[in-house]
Length: 395
Image (tube, rainbow, N blue to C red; front, side):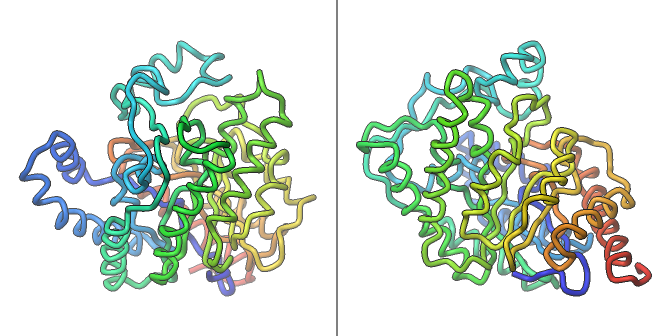
């Protein structure tokens, strides 16, 4: 993983908004259209090539495949790649809900009643239940995604490239278990299966990004009635499981993304970063991608005044928010980067986004044109910060 040795590098969280014609094809595919199924492989490859080229054109240094090969969402996609799960209707979210029960939904029920209808999710598909031994079966799918991405990378100049995969704790935050004797056995089985996907990504020469939104989200769903110590025990097991899933993978090939959920809502029940940072620093990863731009968490940059980033590791703060259509001014982006560079070192900083701009094929947090304007502001802000941090005039 490259450090910012000569300038502040730029990246994002991974999930980008799909082109409208590609979304139309996906809807036909979901409806069982045979012609859509025949056209899908070529169109997916073309869409990945396009999104990689657009990232390079705007100036992003460390690019992704946009997560275009994921079938449903950033986390649920993996359930198509794991044996042992079956879908049960009538479990999990209520009809139309896109955020599970928790303090935020309890406090703002009228807001969520309107919000759920606008987010690109229709109804509920129930929940997934572990009914048998878990094993990885997604070899063809991950190979397809890697091949498409690497083919696209061969046509651009990028400093590095990453592919996202879900963390064990975000695969089974609240999935029902009917097979394993304990919660630990259950999540360790998931971790062992995920190791195959993780290794495939790294062995292909790509950086692995592990997405783990559910680690902090479960706090506001559990506490109360559970205690904070109960939540920490739950989270501690998920940290242990992720380290198990990363067995055999060099730390410097892994970046860990943590956020409080991508939905642009109040988030008044979020767990403070200071209360869980000690868990994150136990992970065998080389970089931490953490929200630092949205108005609920931007103040937490002060945490790095008292918490030392481990040696040789990288902080990827979100300096662009996915949750508002207001485009950040490059001077603000630079200001955020310069103050963090003073705490963790300029070489240990990569400019990123808070979260993905699309958590699934039919979801977008901002308009596509605004997404690209935000990424341009990210690049321009990093250029300004580099000029200040390396005491040179920005181009």
